[in-house]
Length: 190
Image (cartoon, rainbow, N blue to C red; front, side, top):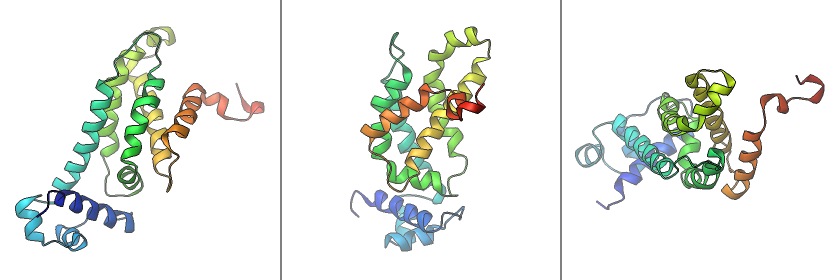
C-alpha cells in the first residue's frame, strides 16, 4: 500500500462526514468502502477503529497548532492577536478543508474543548497583568478570550470558501480590537 493510505482513509471519513453532517458516527466498513480499501486492510495496517482515525486527525491538527503557538512566546510590545494573525491564521488555512468539516459536522463533538486547550495555555501569560486591572479572575478572562478567538476562527473556516489568510488577518485584528458594545448600533450602546 502507498505511504499515503492513511491520508486516503482520513479523506474518506471527511467525505462521509461532509455528505452526512448530521451523523455522529460512521463504521469502518463505510470508510473502507469510501476509500476503496478493504476493512481488513484498514484494521490490520492502519487503524483499529473509527475512533483511532478521529484521534489521528485531532492529533495532527492539535500538534500543528501547539507547534505554532510554542514558537510565539510573549514579547512585551507585541500583541498576542498580531502573533495569531501573522503565524497561526496561515497554518489554520492550510487545514481549512478538514477544519470546515470538523466545525460543521456532528461527528466531532467534544473537540472544541480539546482544541481550545492549546490556546488557553498559550494565552495565559498575556492576561496576568490585565486581570488585576479589571479585577476579574484569570480563568474567567481566559475562557472569554479563548472562546472569542476560537469562535472567530470557526466562523471564518466554516465558510464554503474562507477568505485567504492575508484578507482574514486584517478582519481578525479589527474584530479583536472591538468591544461587544462597539458591535451594536450606536443608539443601543452603553
